[in-house]
Length: 267
Ligand code: IPD
Image 1 (cartoon, helix red, strand yellow):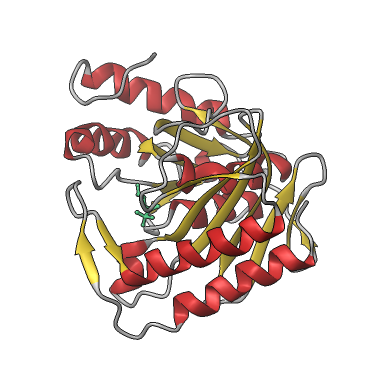
Image 2: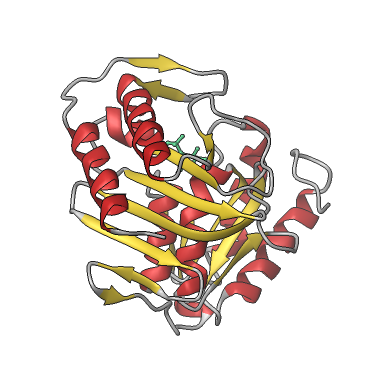
């Protein structure tokens, strides 16, 4: 599924992303939620080029392509994951392209154009980066680095995020906040972090990365149970096989202690 042409297209999208020195930025609806002209251009390029490769595939993409997910083959795209990093010049943003069929991720790639690193996976065939097989870490929770997403566009989740952080800090080695969920998932798949969570995360942010984690031997899904559905934003987490359940217990404790505040339900 992920052939030479596919990788060529995603790398070219990376070149396009890096070609803007000072992209125009617009505010979207949520708190501190932005889109740049580069997000739109990269998305348009990817949709056109990928459509030429697989004309029957549908698209679900961050910038305005929010069609309902069906069982058909569907590309789920975040043209620039880490948009704020991008327009603030932090060089820590990636392109994320997942492929879903029957509402299950079957392939995905996350491309970091600043380091020219292509992370990719196909179901049943392992996760890879530049010829090296990726494997999740075997460290225990007490030595874990946990990547934290802060759901920045949903201020109703601030207290829950802060409380989860308070519960985590004494029980893991430390936390990290990169500003790109897809990049966080690459870290978990590569074994340079043991877990990742965000109380509300969209399918384009987690689609390709969750397959990378699973194919590297880890787990990914809804914090409150079940697999990621790819059709909507969910309380999302991923982790190594060793740390996933322990991290989930800490997050549940945080949710139970915060009570009814915040918009996250245990479903
Ligand atoms: C965002 C990043 C960020 C996460 C947000 C996402 P975007 O993606 O992944 O780390 O905390 O929830 O929306 O908006 O930059 O594509």
